[in-house]
Picture 1 (tube, rainbow, N blue to C red):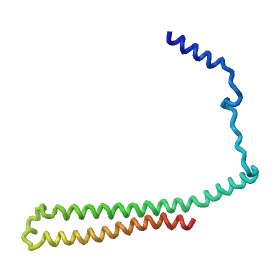
Picture 2 (picture 1 turned 180 degrees about the vertical axis):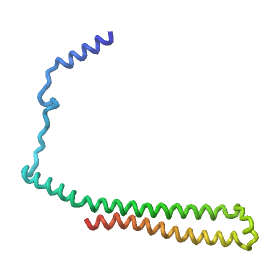
Picture 3 (picture 1 turned 45 degrees about the horizontal axis):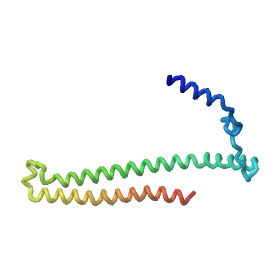
Picture 4 (picture 1 turned 90 degrees about the horizontal axis):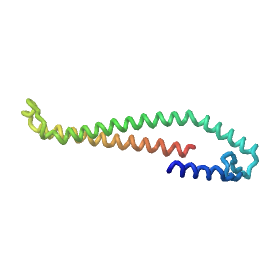
Length: 139
């Protein structure tokens, strides 16, 4: 019974005449204030500009990947130094534990490394921002 209902509904939909405004083939024409010859010239100029800018975009992408890779390595080194400094009190140093203040010296050295790596990381992020910012200004 249900199939019959669906079939009768389909018949009523198909039997309705379609109006020309609702057909799929009709596309509304968008009127432009510019003549078509001017639009063609603009399109050619836009394509030419894109072709001319493509090598510079590729270069900027390469520079971005290089700087971001450097930033990641600085961040990784910073985290490693922090973790090493954090676990120095629990480390088994063996024969080195006989040296006076070895843990203090190691902690201080790791602190200095963290300070250096933090500044390098910030500089690399600034380089990334400068790359983005100055390229926008040049254009």
